[in-house]
Length: 435
Image (cartoon, rainbow, N blue to C red; front, side, top):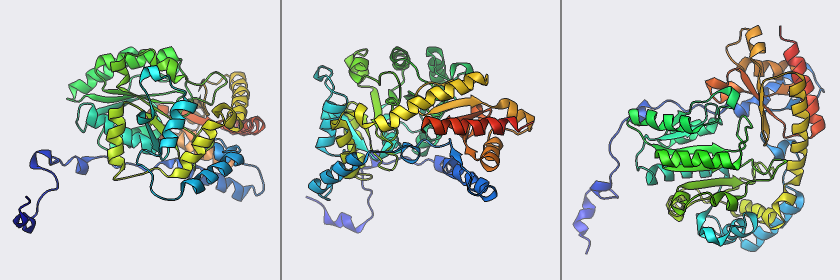
């Protein structure tokens, strides 16, 4: 029976042994900078002030909903009908049972032999939402410590740097070279583990993104498997595969059944898979993705999500509709023109003898070091501003991702091929104008 006298005094919500220890790391943390990705388009506005009525080309974005037709109208309409049928009451913190079932049975068509079912699926409000929830799970369920590390490539997507850091994980840039697209090797993974050990840290997670953002680098299934196994053997707690771009290819998308077959059951407990409709369906503002992981990981996230962000139904309804129609068909309006643009882009880069990285997905990473050196700029940021303001073509300076991308730019070709060709002409003219 509760002692009512206790209510007269302050008391912590959890027992003393479960209290979070005092630490001043928050006061010592680096300030997390706002992403500059959302400011790039403003430079195009300055070009239009000087050249009213002229075309501008935004090769900076990764938004098929802006540069391509986006989610087909019939899918949006059918999803709205599902929303009306579902109503506007709360759903579960993992999403809905229908979403989970559709992801397992119709999108991935998972073989029951592997033991994955609806309980292994989490719906999220876009990739950033699920990634932050996954980082928290991997820190807690891995070695159970804040301050452990997440391994990313030398030139990672900017949110891979600051997302983990914001929830108490340190981010470790793996060794790599531009000639290899800064991709990991088994040796570089082991070097990261040894480096972390010397700083009294463990590795909570290795991120494997394929195709990569920002470089577009694409590696084979076998290579992804080899890297993951090397990480697990070295003591990395979890490996997270970010496959958000994998459908945007002229090859086959990833086959999760085949992939899981390379791992033993104990290894599969330590693998997480992120995918969704943001890129391949042009659903950037729909905000839906899913995570597939061990039930222990999903249960951990769901418990916390019940106190934070619960995914809305309409975004799930869009994904459900697209998956039920057959995702290859649903995503064709994004995938087909992007694949066609990749052919145009490769021909341009080869003809101009550029050093570049070009795999699948939306992006190419292009070395523009000669232009930067000619103007004695410190990195690619002023070049990006110059190209947008003076030549009406926006790209992302590689230095926005890390200092190791300082001589590079990211060029998005998620546009129709004729528009990609026009943007490339502007880019070439802008680079030639620098002496």
